Image (cartoon, rainbow, N blue to C red; front, side, top):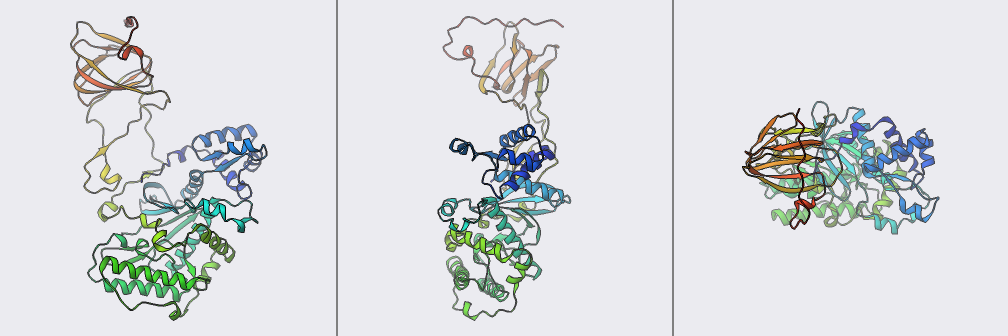
Length: 507
């Protein structure tokens, strides 16, 4: 798990987003969107649109299907990647001031990716990006008869359906005082919700009163059913518990109505999951558990959800997809999604110290801007503690990134040594080199006669074109990385003639 790279968002122009949106619109009816159609939807000239597409493809926000081109000249075009769809949703949420920064990824599964985000007040939230069908494409591809009437069907549409369903259910449950995270906003396949302070129940090893928690969970299942709903994935991976024993439900895309054809199966499975877990983990077993036949409907929350936007037609489409790709598998096979979200959050104190990366944060300019020498003294840079960045309590490690160059060239590393010598050694740098002193001292002089002394841990940056003179009193070793291929004269067994050192122009 790592960070979600949103650095490119601040560099995309309005025309870039117009093209991304045009592809999204075109994908409603096309698996691949032709360039001519994109130009019309985006209202851009052919040449300008092609230039933008080239950059979007380079940054992997858009993909061009070259295989289709070889098969048929009439079946080529562009499609959004998951990252491109993510950027469209993030841009919309940021423009509504819902999200201002994105932090670490704290969950990944077959159906979603989950990140820490924050608003302008630095209030932390959860951003869930639905990836419906990530591991199930083959099943759907083999069983997509029900999609014959929808030629423009794609995974982005499925992910959007899943997000819409989850947001509709979590909003309805929250308004009726069920223990769920507070829903905040929705856009495309992204759901923003409250950050829960707690642990997944699957991480809990001991409970003082397992019978009390067991009864509370069974009551929760019955209460849901009395409102006309069944969670369908009610297990230790989708239940959070805090230090006070308060339970919170998460993960709702699988939720169904008690009017569902297989409602009794899903209800009984939820009950059995809880019973099995308590028997296995806490050695607790009870003969008292609810049965579907005993459920009495008191409310129609399932109908209220349909009225809120997740219509019966959308529900039918989602149910067909769920059955086809195995979204409602047996509980012991299906827990790959939010069950992984909070597994890294065993320590709540580190949970509250999570750092975020602001979308508006300025990336430092590369140091290699003009010819010359730069010396970075050891200990002069402020380090970033990894314990906070990666939420690893007790980790005693720090890091700092220093941009050197944006150039794309070969890279060669090596060792350099210079001991006291009769004469100075001038060397003409036609390439960028970063040299780190590991022992002793390395003393250099630039073309303006400025002298730099590097000691262990110090870093030289030699920016071309420039003559660097290694002074005779140097007495140390260094390792270097150079933007060049291997130099034959620097390799063992060199058979060439002597190399003249460059003349130094007096200034």
